[in-house]
Image 1: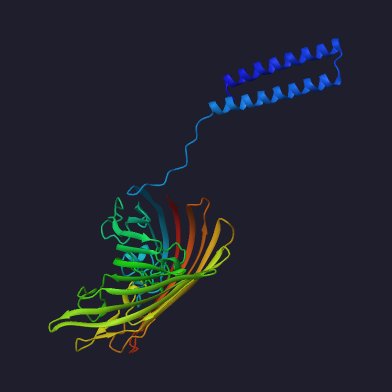
Image 2 (image 1 turned 90 degrees about the vertical axis):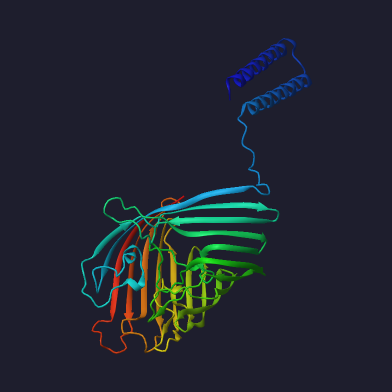
Length: 441
């Protein structure tokens, strides 16, 4: 209560007290009747109520004015959002058949194809970086019953520029850049670079590693995607940028495709289960002296998440003769060029199952088991990858809603084809302990 209000209340209280004393004195000298006493008591009660009301009005007049409810954006008005996260990753890696990954990127996160095979084990190797730190800018613009969203996102992972000698400066790379026109409820058109429609990002397990299990679909590329709601679900149709990876070729990848990769995907949920079923048809092609050689391949993927209270189970299974670069960070190539120059496609499959369990509101763990395999033809060399396995176990702690600290144990292995049996060692594995600190903003 302010000084002005205090003075006002004090004066009214004094006047009321004065009147009460006078009334009591009069009662002692004139001996009023019971009816007169009741009347005076009612007058006093009325004065007290009036005093309280006047004090409330004075307080309300001097109280600060609160901000009104935020107004909804008008048509054509753009809302801007900036966010991302800062993350430090540090890991100790021990290889059974080498001192380090066969490519530097394999030290920053698990890249199955970089696990060395057939060498001598080296000492455990420590590596730390902040390359996965990312920044995004989003906009939302309302137009009638629809809305236009944009998303631009960068990080420094897989950067070819920079080293660890002095400044650890790494070039930024483009992750996402797209416009998403939500024409009406359940209908949208997306154009730009983002996750492949063949990849259900919502099924990817939570972990410290940048990607995770060897059996996940993981692809981000330019595309044109149309989404249409059907009942409680949605149907997505997309045409995406193609690239061809083949064994026995001179390029990896070939960029000689004449058609995009076509993806059809259905999303829905039932109770605690949310799921996606995706199919893909794509051309595998390369240019040769006599013209273009091409084959059309297919693949399917089933993935989802089943909610068990606070816990959940996540899963994915993919199969086809055109998986290639879509699965396990290009762990396998989609086909091989035979001696006549024709393309022979390779059947491949893979998947994972993951359990997330909350020990408490702030502590949780994830257990992820994964495997992939390729039915390689006899044409491939002995050193061609035939199988990958991985297991992830972590413990994560979130002292604040947007902060995560944790550790993760990773075991991954690579099996070579070795069909001739001439290789003395055809399997290598990786054991890694990774620790991370991440804050999202």
